[in-house]
Length: 347
Length: 260
Image (cartoon, rainbow over all chains, first blue to last red; front, side):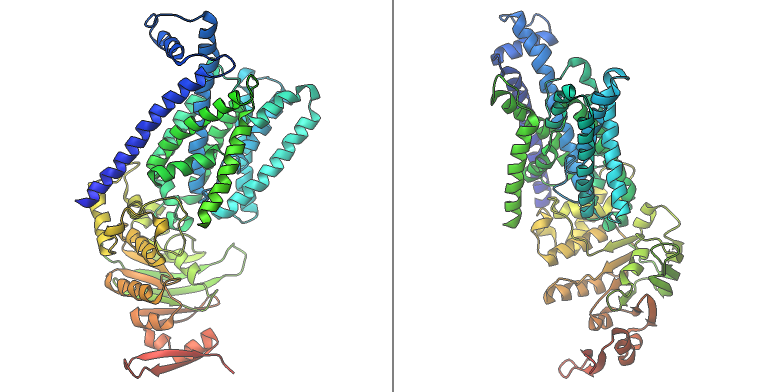
């Protein structure tokens, strides 16, 4: 009897965490819309949102200018922050399982650099010959290319074991970043300010018309990862043990890497490189609700979204009215977290 | 869980087609419910041999038959329902609980993407009870002692309901008490077991048959008292081995001495 009792407590803890997370997410979105160069009171934020969903429900006490700030600029930005944060969170969690390294992160494995390389190539050299989709598509191809390069390098160096895969990722990350720098060097110097945006990350380009791409990638890939949660659990024990459980380890790892590249590539295309989200969020989630990927994945998505919303709030307020690139904020917080983690592991 | 027999037919392994073999063709048979010990110095090919049996490295030649069927002929999942392995891999710090790790044993029995049901929970409970892990089933695996963790890994293998269990150096890094516990466990499971061991006296005590390897060659296969002879052990391990009788327990014991 006791074990079922504990089991229920375990589930209850998860549900409670997710419930609080959803409340916190709604609150964070509201705050993210409210703060900025022009401060909009929370009741106005909710009024605008309610009226957009069900017209004429709330009494309009605000100006048209305020409404367009809330609806046209800040709401899509908050949604993009949520999607990118959720996406990077689940990619980090999944990569950590298949590399069996709790420090794996799309940034550390060179996937983000590949995405930035693709985006820079499109922005500075090829032009938008495929229309608006050029940059996201190139970012994805760049991320995928970097991923395949990591896998090829690990094969070439006979370093297919999980821990050496990380080293292969770091090596590829350096190479791809250098190639991206060559592209910047060869490109039109007047256009390099656009590139700085991709390198440092920012959510300022969010538009309603483009939100569908990150959302659909997040939903489809997230669902696929979630049905594979039991296999991700098995991968954390080790390659050989996972094999004896009937999992085709090499193929499964490749599929996770490609899925990770797809999510990261699309997110990088709309937000630039935002590091350390995938490293930090799953860690905190595991401390809260344990290590089962059935729970870790949805919780990483939720808390990744909340984390990036608050990072964006900090980025927009700390040097207001200037927007600080969000990658600087996540880099500072992530780096400090890394140091704290090292200390935790020693004690 | 009905134990199945194991037959290895001329299995050999090389890293690549044209490279020299690390394990030369070896054949042996283990009857259902028997324990086979694999012994030999470091680099003899013990792990290589075991990897072909738990379907991790495909044999360059030969067949591995479990219950009469070639485990390399079918899909990995089919083999995983028959052969479980307790390996030396240390799980990463991912916060999985003891119960969650043991439940992983049900993976090859899952239908499609279904999650474990009540029947699986019952099997997991039995495995936990058998390994006396019930009181710590919700503890984080990362916070357990080496002996407890090894028991969790055995429980996970039992939850897999295999017909054959492969164990790679199960007593490594354990203190004496936990070593003895694992050994008495191996004897009590009633499964067909292939186990690699460093300690020859342990092998003599718990195994029905012993396979001795050296530099990828089989140096003997048969009853422990035949294979673990003074001459054989001395030659294979490059030591002087003496078979002595312990005065207190009146049992035979191998002692080892560096040659002059």
